[in-house]
Length: 506
Image 1 (cartoon, one colour):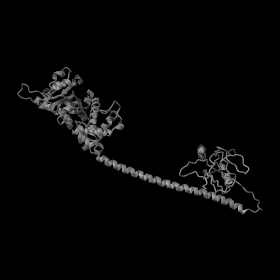
Image 2 (cartoon, one colour):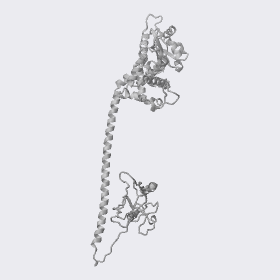
Image 3 (cartoon, rainbow, N blue to C red):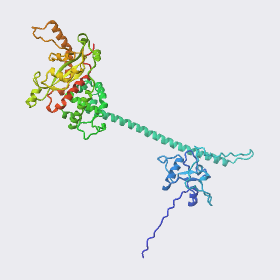
Image 4 (cartoon, rainbow, N blue to C red):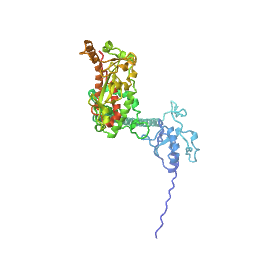
């Protein structure tokens, strides 16, 4: 016969018990308890009059538990863990916190009672010292004295043990902190070395640093300081520019760039100064060729409008203040020195376009531009590019420079600028070398005038040479880039003003 399995039912009763209640239920005396409140020396071994209460631990009492921890100034963590032996003594409760005593004499806390008496608040009452008055003739009980001394010694040892434990924890934490500091310093040093190696392997402005010769070779700026000043000059506007071919009409976000802004500017300057191909730049800067093309077009548009918006035509007072002695003595009214320069372009298949671009002076198809400099050497006028077949007189009339001149000014130019009658309408004088005309030879005065004008006009040739040092303009400009060549040419002319003075003052 097989018996049926017996079902066993466990009933779990979850009640809050203090020491006296627990002892009455279990029928045995528990181990010693120590009060967990800071600065309290309550111990069940030496203070039998005290009751020790558990910290609420049931799930529904989580809020009450937090209140207890706040009141006793304790936080759960590595240094304080709540166990079944963690107790708070009755010193920290008031009479109103307790229920009436039971028949067995035990007394429990009321539901929701929270400790409130501590030695850091005014409501806490320190224990009254017990002073024993003994007659001289009465013999002292040595056993009572020994008990008090033993109790004080044990309490002192407990405090000293806790202090030593805290000191040990503090030393351990200090050691961990020092180790963390050393690790952080080592990580920073390693990161610094990695950045230094990355900078050396990266083709960018930081790679050359104070190497001014390389800076001048790649960008045209004389020193690293010059290019940094120029970048800081354009940076506020450059951070807001919208990239060419960007999808949609939205403001550009600097965080979305795959290159530093200063490296983008550096790449554009390298392209203009050395005339490198876009594929070469893509390999050097480790980006896609389409990104190179987009950034170059964007920077070309930005610098053309940014530099073009700056006022480079000086006032009459500024010209007089900066005028060199050579002009001041011989031609003090000179406002501008004019000359033309030409850029070779790819020969088109159209015969009509060939005839328009053909320059009899260069015997090639070219684009022609007018450049004007002040007597002290700064470029103060840059015209747009015209077809190479245009004359110096016509380009002067079309460029708009005549509207900038004032009555009483004088213009210095080469013999090809037959613009004397046009300048007379503006009450402006023209200083050019004399023509031979019907004379058999130049007079001594004409020869001297030719030499003087040539020695002063040579500075415009030097300014044009600075422009031609941007080697993008060296080779034949492809017809496909005619839409942007005018911008690149104008930027090259205006950037020469950032290279320092052309004429050094003596």
